[in-house]
Image 1 (cartoon, rainbow, N blue to C red):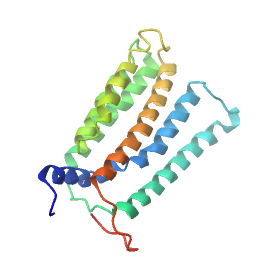
Image 2: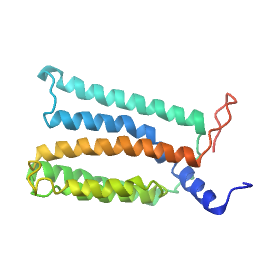
Image 3: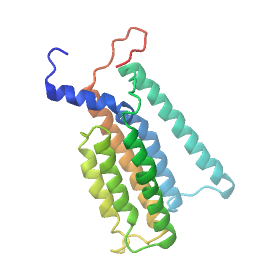
Length: 206
């Protein structure tokens, strides 16, 4: 690639190797859903009881539809990436056997046991840092988000939130905010690294 210095080439390779995870606008609707549901579960706003299940299912459906639409947008604008089989096998194995279970268990423990310190704040902060490192680095905003989520873990201890379901609901809303802001910043960083494909009417692969 003429005119591309090695450092820039490494960044492009890191992004294309983890292309799906850099498509930040995909995470924005998910963040909005987590924010809305977190505030709903915390009692900040309510709907009549007969509509509760329909509301939550509706939010999930709309979230998936908008995220899929953003996926098509990225394919049209930047093309598609053909993954290398087995390239991320180790990451996938660790993610599904260690990281995701730890994140889920921390939420369950915080909800049922109501410890004086929100365990999820620290577990999810570590998860965000692992996510950043395993998906191509960059995105310094996650270096800000992680300690903020960790600091959230002290809210019950200092009396700013009741332990148990109350603080977990607020934490989920906070994670939603991280998804929204992080997603937008991911998108902006992606657009700085990759150039849109020419509009020829065909979808190219990068």
